Length: 332
Ligand code: UDP
Image: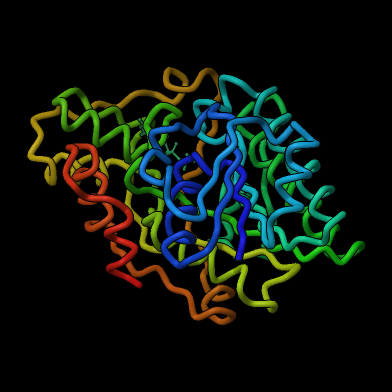
């Protein structure tokens, strides 16, 4: 099979490319390197069946050609990371909506099955835990830039589902919960790589808010396994799936655990949200996926626990020979 991955030089895209190649497929990626990096795909260059194009998905003739040459599309190109979203809301909204419009329209011309990456952020401030795919989305005021990410991704979901309903373009949507693993950068605020880097350099570990907010972290290898399975089963077409781990940890316990695992002397500091992200910032206290839909449809379950995930990230940041490739082959 020939796959096209938009955003293929990003954190998740590069792991997906690696696994699809390992399974004997051809993979073409397109990435404008806005948040992805060449370093993420360095090890794939020259591999049989791999090709890459550094350009934006807004380059319509180019994307049309890449779509023409592939069998299946994974659309992962997006603006991600709460810091980036708060700092550059125009870029977030435009990137997330325009690029998805372009990809779906071109995919529809050739009727190429298309995967659309969405996010657990769409659940917003919902208190209906665990979050299930048909639950309400509770988004805050438009004056809070953070919510533009959830809204832009919700529009992507609507559009993907509409293309299936109205035009019979096979689409699948996954809401990814906090995904972590080697190669994720802390530049856009993501908590695990940020804490690991702070701990390894004995700088203060910066917990935002009171630290009692919690998240569930999924190893990128588990996510990649779900993404591949979702595009292999016709039952998934026209559906939205949660993809994540449902084991919760508070952010202050995450800080303590990372300090312990790294043997760091870092102090743990608490920074008010306003200082970290700007006035009036709203965070969600808890975010847990209901996994029954993906479990019942595909038998998919996360297989890598938080300790192993954190060790993997720490090993990568220390420059050990740990790679997601090793983790992928462990669970294959
Ligand atoms: N967070 C933190 N310190 C950091 C970065 C993030 O305490 O340096 C907190 C953040 O406020 C949130 C959680 O960690 O409550 C997860 O943040 P992230 O940006 O990784 O993902 P989110 O779940 O917010 O999309």
